Image: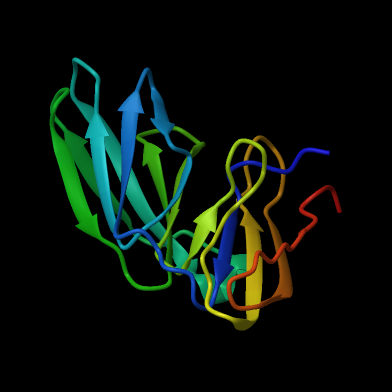
Length: 166
């Protein structure tokens, strides 16, 4: 059985990467989902590009995100990058100007599921809350699932979270 790629798994103690780099290439943003406190946006296009970064809320409101004010981002040509610090706990959407789909960025402790739907997080021993969030895309609604996992010292703990159809 396969998992779901590009879902965010949040925990109370997992370290988040300090920065995420999202690249605009061939009219698409990659990766489509990231976790970081600093966002770096770059382009490989040979022409100027206009994007928008919109804060949709916080991790406390994953089930009721709403777009706030959009911040325009101008990338002149390939080789240029823009760096932005994100609010702690913030949930953001980066979009190519005029496009409905985009990339999601969260500034919180956790990780992103890989192509097979797995996320590997290093946690200290103890009981941890885990929240899996799959952003809305491709006509599908967002999904949020909460669970807990107990981690023992020097051991692997597994937690399966079902993000399948409701």
